[in-house]
Structures are given as structure tokens and as C-alpha cells.
Image (tube, rainbow, N blue to C red; front, side, top):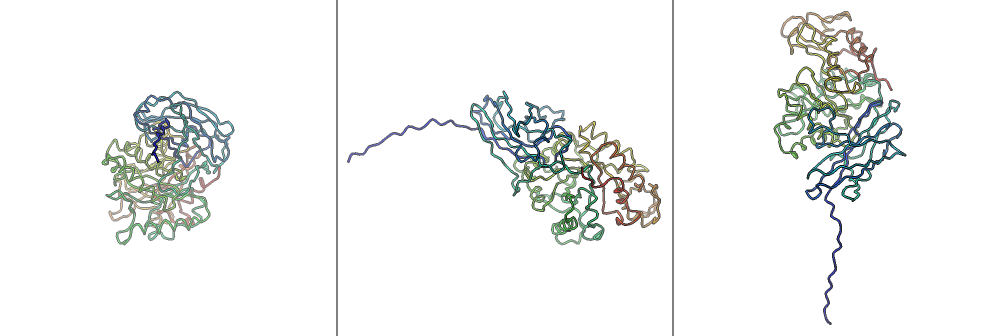
Length: 489
């Protein structure tokens, strides 16, 4: 039999080099606030794609509880995964390219954008949220179609590498934040019986402080006594104790990372390889997610490099990617009179805790420093008031000296009947008896009233573990809760 050979023509299939991925961004949305990011659209283009037109992008509101909560839909473009609107650097600033409104839970943007260069660019689905939006309503966004060069692609949805189950962003449920910091060894040993279930019904978030990055970029435990055999197990014990005390209360438990000068952003400054940088963010996200935390807080204290905020920006952006779809919040604490963490960083956080204390004077935390910090956040950092949480000290500072400090419990032990109007006293420490300043009960109340009356996001406390028992007549916590506490919107 004669062998026959057939030539089968290859079909001319279009080669589409462009890839499109989407990642949920923020887990916290605020009622009445404009320009809140919901979704990142990451576009990777090859050299052959340069010049192609992006003609349309289609979205739905996905699992959003009430699509009417979204009053305006915006589309932005940027060259980096750090979404910032207020930077002075035009190379990093996100630019609005289209606006629209939802119709039956969907919106289509028609654009005339050309692929300018090979590589990665980012688009962002951004919402204005109605002031009437109810607390805990879900906010979601899905990119259903991306049309470029005449071809329509279905984007690939992505979650953070260690995110096991999609958790949707929600409208923040409380009128104000009350955010105490609490340290590991104080939870387990030195103030082991201080916290109780009542506390968790009064504050909104508690920051378990703290973790740090080891020299190799892995996560370590910062606050522990030297006799602890396994510091990370020590931290895990404290974390589980917090969860048990919380019970069914709605307050959130946040993992606190410190300090900038302990190496947090130094890894980003000294590591030029992008993949290696992201591995550091992945280590942090893994700890947060596996530990079941509701948020992560970065302690901006104290950078010695005036441009350190650039590396903080990169780290926060990578953390966003690693936490994508987790619903986890990202916050930071900052001393705003020391190398301000510029808008590129603060645009990315869900809230900022101002360290409105440690002024080297005869009053380390007067009302004026809190008011000044509030003004810096709004006027310099361009932050909405809802994201500004102003710091209260539950400790002393020796006059003009930063590190000679004692907790409020020590003040009460030396002055059992101290007047609530007193903010200065002679305190005996290992350095002798000297003048110390602090915030007494009345000043704490005055600050809380000012925060509420002026529409700011709430108050933060460093450090809550130094208060006396909540049932004690001298408790600063009791004074604070008489003015501001966990209250539903």
C-alpha cells in the first residue's frame, strides 16, 4: 500500500501577549468618603503590544451588599502598585482616566488609552461611598472584560499568596476608633490580669505590639523579657489570650510591627531586587494571616533617613498585594514632627495613629501637639479626617528628657488620690526623684471631646497596659470611655 502524507495547514490564531490580573485592595471603606480604592488591575504587556489601544473596561459591583452605597465609580491609571493621589512626584501619581455610575450593578468605561511601553502598568477601580452606607455592608468590584487591540480578555482574579478564603471589604461600622497598643510580655506576665472582656466592648481595635523583622527578613517577636525561651511562642500565647478575652465582641485584633529603625524599611532600602523585597512583605502577611489577625500596623519610629518614606511606600504596596482579598486593614503609627511619612505612604493606609506625645518640655503631650498633628494629617498629608486617629499617652516623661518614663499605674501608686486635673508631679524612678509630665483624667477627657467635636477618626493609646484596672477610680481608660467608646454608626 502506498503511503500518503497530508499537509495540514496551521490555523492563524491571534497571539495575545497581554495578560491582565485583578486584586482586591482595601478591606476598610468609610461612609461619606470619596476616592476609595476597591480593585487593582495589573496589565503586563510585551514589546509587540506597544501602541495597541485599550478601548474599554467593564466592571460589576460583585458581592457588594447595596450597590446604591457606591455613588460614583472612577478609573485611575498608574505605573506602580502604590496607589497615591497626593504625591508631588508625577511619575508615581495615579491619574483619573474615566468616571461613571453603576447601572444595575455594572459600569463600562470607554477609553482611548495606548499601551505606552513594554512592562507592567496598573489600573484602579475607585469608589465614592454614600454617607448613608450602613456599617459592615460589603463593598466589592469585579473586572469582567478588558478590551485591548481589538481583543476582549477576561482578567484573572488573584488573591494574596497566603489568603485561603476571599473576605470582602466592608464599610467601617463604628463612629470612632479607640485603638490601644498592648505589648506581648505585659499580656502574658507583667499585666496578665489587667485586660478583661469589658475592655473589648469599649475599644474598637487592639494592636498586639509587637513583631519585627529579623536580619534575614523573617518575622520575630519584639517585646519580651530576656528569659523567654521561645519568643514567637510567647507572642502566639499572647495573641490567643486576646482572642479568648474578645469572645463575641466586635473589636479587632491587629498585629503591630516596629520599628522603622529596627529594620522594617531598611530591607527595602538595602534590597534592590524586587522579588526579594516582595518576599519580605510575604513573610509579614503570612504571620498576619496565619495568626488570624484582623489588621497589620507599622510603627514609623524613628527613621534616620529623610527619604525612608519611599521605602515604606513600597513595603505598604507589596503588603497590599500579599493581603489581597483578606479584608485585613493596614495602618501605621507616626511621629509627625520627625521625618513625616509622606503622602505616597499615607495614601495607602486605612488609618494613621499619630504619636502626639514625647515633646521634650515640661509637658510632653499638651493639647496643642494633638491639634497640630491633626492639622498636619489633613493639610500636609491630605488625609481625610475619618482616617486620622490621634494619640493619647498613658505614661509620663521626665521634663526635657525622652526616655525617663513610667506608666500611669506608677503615678497612681505614688499618688493614690491624685486630682484628675493634675498633669505634672515629682516621680521617683531609678534615676531619682524628678519632675514628670503626663495626661491626667481631665486632659484625657478634653482631648477625646475635641476629637469627637471636630470629626476626627478617633484616639489611640500608648500604652494601654500601663493603666490601672478599669474598675479603679483613677483609671484613664474609664475617663476616656466616659467620652468616647465603641459606638455603632
